[in-house]
Image (tube, rainbow over all chains, first blue to last red; front, top):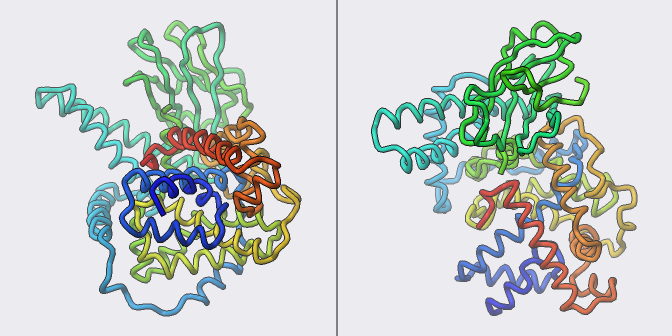
Length: 267
Length: 196
């Protein structure tokens, strides 16, 4: 098989459109020393094909399926040899993860792992950004502290999104605003937590940020301020505010009181 | 990519370290992966096979295969999600081809453009991401969408699918390439870390 033949068939392979013989030939070619272009095309084709599965509503297997899987697993000693090259990297990553998890020391394990993955990635991005814009140590430290605080909020918002029952509430534009400011509220009634995240914040946004309001029983309740940071912002709604009952509406407003975004969904 | 999309994208990731744990014989790690991805494998198998019992069998076979083949997983070839989805899809298609008959397209099974059937186990972010993917698929020109669906869900080879549509094989391949290009663009938006 040539590279051109591989590239010609890789998408059909990812979609399951090759015969058994063609599939085996593709496997053999990939197991050899394919070019980077072939490896990239393979990775991209299979990731794209997986989107077709991701578009389907998930279906929970019958409860006995897991029992059948467990029964089918032979007892197996831990792998001592033949470990793939990437395993060393994975072990190192897990070690780093464990150290940071100890630091976090809250939430259940799965939530902390999910948060950790995001925080490590965000931290890398933060370091790169800071390295490119700051020359003095004090400035670096200030920026890192600010970014770290934002990362923790984002991690908490992700954890809330992972909980069944969390509502994702879009805030729609009020009035003829010309900019593309967009925001969503993430709200869980049971655990009484909510965040508002905003993106595409315009450069001429008010320096003191946007006011977040909850409306309950026709009354507006102050629920924090969204201050732009690189076009994005996130704010955690104070728990005390949510303790008083379920809000009907989330609003984003200017300091003057003019509402710019508002949720239309009754919560 | 919007801040919210960045949050959603994180939910599509599975730490590849979990495959190392499975390769080392950790059944709890396999269970975690099962909880995360079995509903997706079940959905694609049910869509292809049109039968709940067969779909459950595919889920079982897929995760037993994950257990046996974990040591062969190579993260440079794709993500954990892509790998497990591929294993499940391949088993569903193989079973469909062995059966020799295909369910009527879409009969009794959800289609990618009917994303509103909420699952109680689906989070808000997952629903949001799924709706976005389904909307992108719905925007594909019908001939492109048919081309990918005949192979992915009906188990047809590209020659069979081209003949089914009455298209020349070259024309059919062009449609598939265009459709996959659009899916790739969506992938860049939703999960940029999957970009080669």
